[in-house]
Length: 266
Image (tube, rainbow, N blue to C red; front, side, top):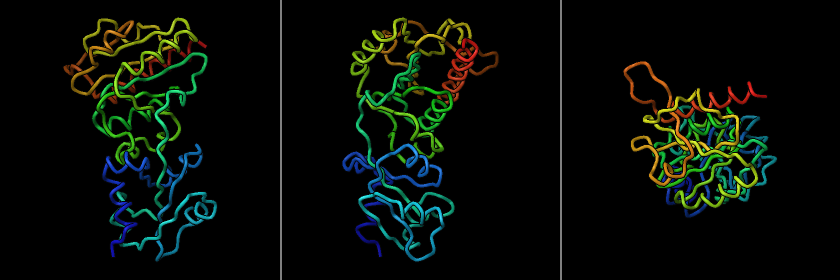
């Protein structure tokens, strides 16, 4: 029967308020759980199937587990919780880390990506994946946005979620002091806005210097505060009839151009 453990896990999976209140989130999938463990995320609990033999992978994780709690569930209830086509045998409940900008380890030539009110979990997850692929130091998510810790967001990152710090802030105002301090450590830091209406093509701009890249909302672009904060703005040249790209696609294109320039400049 549906017990309290099932209700807790099922609510945590689908309810943003529950995740926020408990400061925990729901993770399933071999790669995602492996990445969480590899990057030393704090595991609050594991839930696993108790009426069939576990794989060597799941058994090994449980044997080494330092989680506070283990939940045993029958396969029929695990099937109802799992969002995978093949029901997960193991689910992790992971603690949400603090939204502290000090979690971003800034290197000698930093690249920071700031996301302004990204509303779709799939877009957010894909952007995180691209940022990880291109060695971005950290991501800052501001405004009323998609839930960073929703299963849909995490799934779209295909494991990259756990390898790059993502910090949530309420507004651009919460970021200004940190950027000022970053500029003191890295003179020449440039804040670059992205816009379909910008005049400067992406490939003409010099991204080899310390950069904070601003990415705007899917429908409305960057807020006024971010546009005023920017030192320059770039656009992706297009020759077809499309006037813009999906925000996740556009971010990937920009990041790969930044990576190309920085690799050639070494």
